[in-house]
Image 1 (cartoon, rainbow, N blue to C red):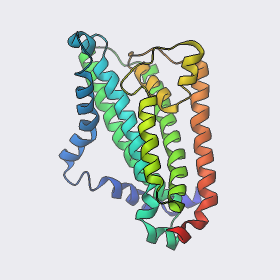
Image 2 (tube, helix red, strand yellow; image 1 turned 135 degrees about the vertical axis):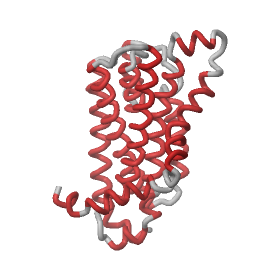
Image 3 (cartoon, rainbow, N blue to C red; image 1 turned 180 degrees about the horizontal axis):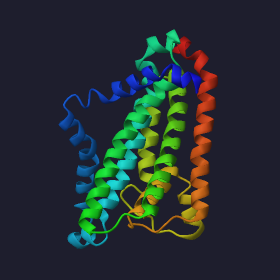
Image 4 (tube, helix red, strand yellow; image 1 turned 180 degrees about the vertical axis):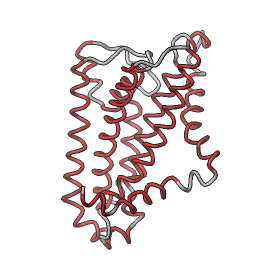
Length: 257
């Protein structure tokens, strides 16, 4: 806590450093933030086959995709940007003027801010179009989904960043596993599984976060208590292991960068 207060100015400047290039022209920045998942959702939902209008309106498939893509873009962008942060800020890493953990955390929080913008817009449009009221469980579910995906993305980012400091080719491996992760996560599809198979499928924290957010909008069935405990447990464990690995490896970063 003392270190956080001591370097708070650097921390906020690092977050602004991640956001400033995109938002130099504020309007274009905000359009890009929600436009990327929005346009992707339009493209995907336009190829769902026959009964397009019924699929989009009655089944809320457009919002289903928009929520999934918003969470996925946050996760993938966090991993990609944070994993190369050390190599892009070599002077800071070698000088040891600030905790190296902040260098990784800043781009993740910048991506989280953009995710919040997206979710706010989805929330407003969905309830305006459907005419539904906002329930307490919606805020609880969205909050849990955000905590879960933030823990998971931060843990993996710390792990990948530490490995990338030692092995510069890690960025190619990371890109490959992100592609696999996209296929294994219900970003644009709803898995037709139940019982123990569903519990295994939702061991993937990204899948669980998407299910929580969609439940908040009434688009998907609520997760079971088992899925909740397992999902939050895995993401918390990932954060702890990533932080420990990063902590024990950070003394060697200056030698390899």
